[in-house]
Length: 247
Image (cartoon, rainbow, N blue to C red; front, side, top):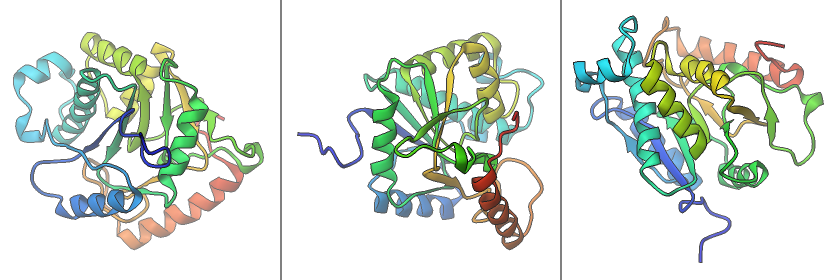
């Protein structure tokens, strides 16, 4: 009998975007963080920068997108969706390799799944607080975990259903990747009619945003202590008043 309090491994295909070599601090962090929360650790290491061939670029990447780290991360997400569709599991849970999980991650994650109501729903759940986007405290309802959103959060921690993975893979095959994966996801999900849901309060946080790690993709590197201070002040202000880029 399945453990009804543990992580639902039989239902959720879980992968963590990572690299074959390097970033050992992130690998150690993920193993420690996930094991103590009871979340399975499955690294996805295909499509490192050195693995990007002209063939895969021609197939999936627009010519104008030339930044290799951005291309690599995008291909990892797409590769995970494709692998998920080869299984019979109803849900796909994707992480990037700098996430921190809430202490009660599994219990709240299961609540979110139950609230979603089923895997036929064409929806994505953003589990984290990417870009410090929050639903304001006065809009929160007791017992409610999922809140409709006008746009995505970042791609560090999200759950999708099979209809979403199918629609995204078909869209990429036709239109190709032309920007960073978090922006690409938002753009295509709007066109595909994917329901965007924010998990409130978030149960994951991105380490390259909260000052725990330097970013591995792009952007100016700031001292980590300064980044952490800025993030924390912004975080608690927005948890109270909310922040939505289109509100």
